[in-house]
Length: 388
Image: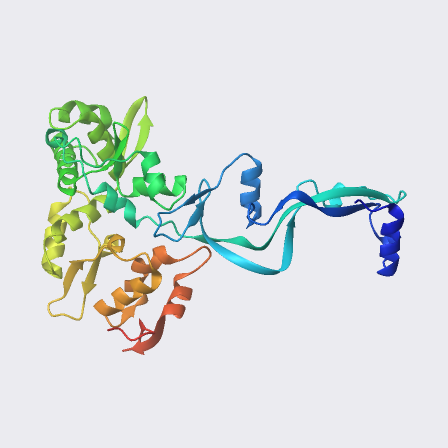
């Protein structure tokens, strides 16, 4: 039964609340006949997410049965955690917040609102890194090795929708990573190029550059497609140029400027991938000879790809790719400290940079997971935990 104005005023008087200090509308709450506590969940969203939802955007919960669920917007990923509250949270669909009520002091009016449900917890969102390690594993089930090797039509292949159903990442984060790992859309399916095939593509392009005496900063797309179409599909040639160069137009002609660092880096990977360790000086000589003329190799091009061991005699270098390490922060540090007891910040930074959360620095990450000390006047870091 709804309360009368007199009953509300009497209640306020008993509570020693001055009616003139309040809005002129009182909302009297009653429980709905269909009241339930299990049909609703609450989620706390920040201003950016709220505006995205109000603009018609959507949020998606992603994860397999064995995964910790994450929530994804169009461009961000969030951990989902239940937060308990000591205050009972009531769901009132037709309830009005103070800003929706008249502020003028008219005679007190009574509005009835029904409580549809309640909860004593809500979902709390915390921005997290997308979980992308599984992506490359899926795409490597059926790498593209060239049109002549496309025989197994029953092999696993994935559309964008398929990947979004299995990868815990937002749409934009997924697409950015597909581009970063040089994945290519072939007949609607995302494929990774076999590394040897990708290197053959790149080698044929650089050989054409050499024979035509082109500068690597001005590679014409049209001529590349015409000259190499006998060897490779046109879309693969253009894809390779997009992976290792920047497209631009000049007087109506499409050109590519090949990026020195990217080509030097992938050439180093090709040299190192079949060797456990490589003599550093010999590697540097072979590496420089293997890149196109006019390009200069530098060790800083190999951050997060290869590691130099300056304690060995002679000095050596070996392949160590960030993408092959665990996505879990503690496991990543355990692996790195089991390989090398002490690290300089310059050496370890490329292997933990991707672990930094929003507004988190490498220094803060090292403070949490490592101890620092001086070794021969150089600051080094070792594990906070015993490494077995």
